[in-house]
Image 1 (cartoon, rainbow, N blue to C red):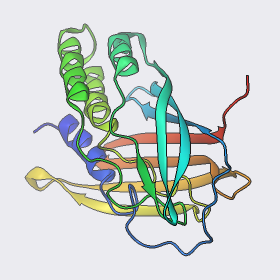
Image 2: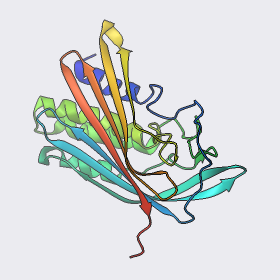
Image 3: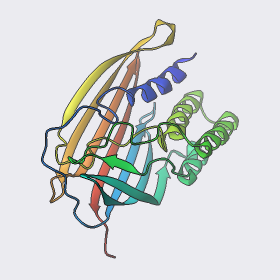
Length: 241
C-alpha cells in the first residue's frame, strides 16, 4: 500500500478517534433550549494540497429541532452546495458538488444538546460510492501531476465517506461545547506509525449558548508527510431575505 493510501486511511481513522466524532461520555451542562426557529448550518471543509493550493467544499443545511421526550431530534435538508479546486481538479469538484448528501439526518440530541453516540449512520450511501468510482476514473485519465493524482484520490476517499460515515461534531448544538485539543498515535499497516492531532475551537455563540461558529482542524502526520484538513461551521438563524 502506498503512502497516499496510508494518508487517506489515516484521515478516516482520525474521525473515528474518541473525541473527534460523536462522543459517548456525558457532559455536565444546563438543559439545551432551541431558539424556536430553523437554523442555517454551513459546513466548509478545506483541504490543503501538496503545493499549498486548497480544495474548499461548502455545504449549507436548513435544520430544525423537534422535542423527543426530554431531548431533541435534529431534522434537516441540504439547501446549497459549492466546491472550488485548482483547474486540474475541476472535474472532481463538479462531481463533489453534485454528490447527494444522505445519512446525515436525523441526529438525536440528549437534553444538553450533545449528539448521542451512534445517532449518525456510519455507512456511506451507494450513491457516494458510485460518485467516488466515477471520480477515480477521471483522475486516472487526467493530465495532471502524480502528486495531484494522489491528493485527489485522498480527497475522493473522504468525499465518498463524508455524506454519512463522518459524523458532525457531537457538541455542535450544545451550550456545553468548549475548546479542546487531542493528539493520538495511530498504528497503520506495514508497521507504519502516525499521529493525528485534532483541535476544536468555538469562535462565536448563539443567544442560547450553543456555538454559532465552530472550527475542527485535523493534522495527520505519517513519516515526513503532513496533511491538514479543516472544517469551519457557522450556525445562524435562517436569513429572512
